[in-house]
Image (cartoon, rainbow, N blue to C red; front, side, top):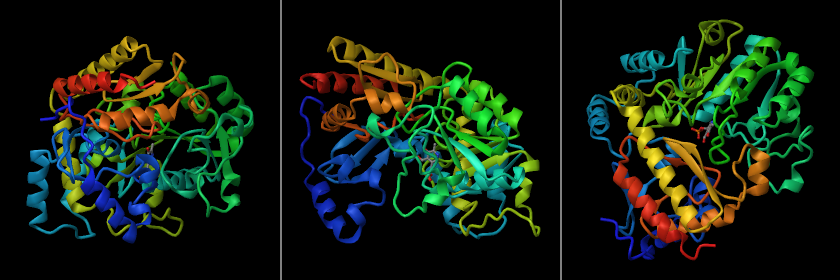
Length: 447
Ligand SMILES: Cc1ncc(COP(=O)(O)O)c(C=O)c1O
C-alpha cells in the first residue's frame, strides 16, 4: 500500500546502482531521457511491475503513469501476455523467417486500422518512420519532405530538427523558423531536403504548401503533438493537411507511434476521421515488447517487393516471433468490449481531479489532452497550441519539481514536461483518486 502521508526519501539502493552504472553505461543509462539530467540527482531504478504499480530497488511502491513512455497499454505483466510469452518462448524465440505469428499480428492490425492494406513490422518506432520516408521518396520520386516544429519522429538523422524545446529567442520568425538540429554528428546537408513549418496553423501550412508542396515527397505529422506534452490539433487542422497534401501529390505520413491503439482501436486516424497514405506505429502495439510498424496501401508498400528498384528494408529481428505473439494477443485484449470506454473514463477522471486541485491551490496550471493521454502545463495561458507556445509559456522547471514531489508520494512519472501521462487498461478509478490526493499534497507550498 502506498502511504502518501509519509513521503519516501529512501532511494539508497537506486543511488548505489546509479553510481555503479556510471562505470559501464554512458551517464549510467541507455537514453539521455532517463539519466541524471532529467531525474536529478539520479533515476529511480525500477525492479518490478504488476498492473499499474511498480516497485523500485529500495522496495518503494508507485503507481506508474509513465508506462514505458506509453508502450505498456496493458500495464505491467498482464497475465495473458505473460502466458503468451512463456508458451511461445518454450518453442523458440525467433527464427528470422516466415512465421504464423507475424501473419496473425498483421491480420489483427489490418482489422482495426482501415488504411492498413498491408503492414511491414520493424523493431522500433524510429525504424518505422525511417522506412516510411524512404517509401514516400521512392513512390513520389521526390526527395524533400516537410516536418513540423516540435514534432519528434525518432532519432533518424533527417528528423532531428527542432524536436527539442529552445528559448523563444532562438526560434526565429514563424514564417521562416530557425533550423535547430537536435544532435551533433549529423551533416548539415542532411537537412537540405527538410522543409520546416509551424504546426496547428492552417494559414501557415497553406502558405508553405503553396511554395513547396509540389517538391515534397511527404508531410510527416503526429496527429496529437505528443513530444511537447500533449497538444491537440485544432478543429479541422488534420483534414486540411490531408487536402493540401493530396492537392500537391505529397504523401501524408501519420506518425501514430504514440497515439496508435490508444484513443480508439484504429488510433487517431479513426478518432479524427482522416485517411493517411502511410501510418507508422510502435509503443502500444507491442505492449512492452520492442516493435514498430509501417502500414498503408499495397501501391506504396509494394515498393519493398524484391526487384532491381526495390526499397530496401532488412532486419534480423523484424517480425520477432515473441513480439508478434504479444502484439496479436494485445490487439485481441484491446478489442474486448468496454476497453476504450474505460481508458477514457479513468483518464478523464484523473484530468478533471487534477484541474480541481490546481484551482483549489490557486496555481496557474492547465491539464491538456483527454482520456488515455494528457499533460500538465504550469502556465498562465488557457491552452498550449504549438511548439512556440510550449517554448515561451510553459514552466518546465516547476513541472519537474512537482513530479519530484509526486515521486516521493508514490506516483511514478518522468519529470520531463515534453512527455505525457498515460492511462493503461490496468489503471483504475482508485489509481486516479490516489493521483489526485498526491497532487493535492504536492501542490502545498509548490509555487
Ligand atoms: C511520435 C513518435 N514517433 C517515433 C518515435 C520513435 O519511436 P522509438 O522510440 O520506438 O524508436 C517516438 C518515440 O517516442 C515518437 O514519440
